[in-house]
Amino acid sequence: QVQLVESGGGSVQAGGSLRLSCAASGSIVSINAMAWHRQVPGKQRDLVATITREDRTNYAASVKGRFTISRDNAKNTVYLQMNSLKVEDTAVYYCNAHINSPWPNDYWGQGTQVTVSS
Image 1: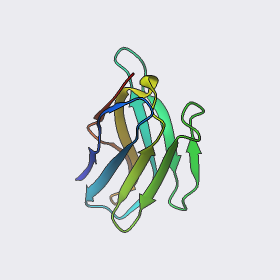
Image 2: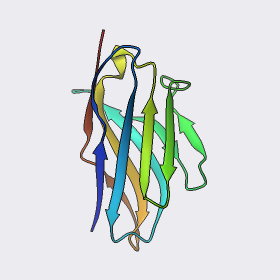
Image 3: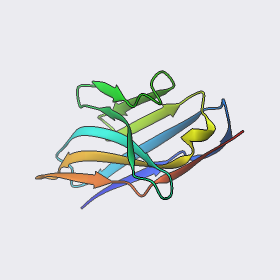
């Protein structure tokens, strides 16, 4: 069994920063790509950023230059550093990982709320 547990969400004023963490645990052989998504109630879940095992990254246009995704393979953890936060960044943030345990599968965290006020 594999679990992804997120932490670091909360409330912040516009212009502030937050750092999200997501740790994977369980019967993990290896972790391939990891990612962060976000969802606002009533809307679809959108991809925010991805990172490969080789640290190649990709970002949604709306967060490029403000958010940074990184990972620590020794800790099976992915991070999302969010700077210059805007009100429109308010959402539930979910981490996602493609994990071999031992067969490849797609796992999701439970989500963490990020609220940015003006």
